[in-house]
Length: 258
Image 1 (cartoon, rainbow, N blue to C red):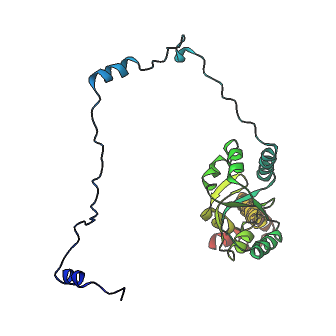
Image 2: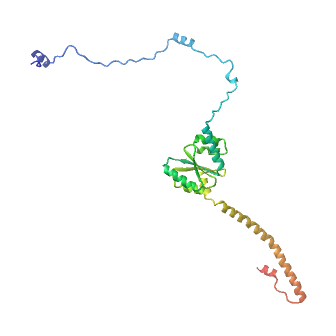
Image 3: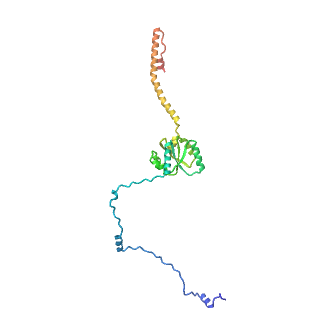
């Protein structure tokens, strides 16, 4: 048939015959460029033609320093900074807390319980609060404004109530506070919350102050009362001597016996 091999071709293939032209693919050699030093004449040419900037007529050190023009703040930024200033001016207690992300329902619940004690929650940006604090008497609070923070502010001192509410909100951590213009750490706020109320402290102070004058008054009156007792006894003896009746035990002897 047409597809069958001729006897000569089949005999040559069986004997191991190979074609005269064979195509063999060989790997090409990588072409690399090696660094070669620049010719000496070219180096001189490059050095001669190098650009040299002209020297200024006046040395820069002799010129007056340039006044840096401060960047004008945006109106909204000024408004936010003014609000921060009002918060620190109008409230006696400002607590700085670290705020972690929490569901909106928990935020509403926390605000509700804090508002029951007249404590407000203020969300502020560090870019707004830090310039305000750096130019005020609260500059020592700057190390606390390094992350996402919130402020718990109140016109009254409600440290005990604030700690009680924050105890149930683990996402909010107290860092420090400023109470009556006194900066306190977290431990300082906890110690302050354990103190008695102002009315109780005033009562204790008044009682302690009233005790000393009463003791002093009793000591001062003791000598005069003793002198009056001696005079009364002396008068009693004189009257008894005139009447000739025996004398009774004197109060001074009774006092000395006791």
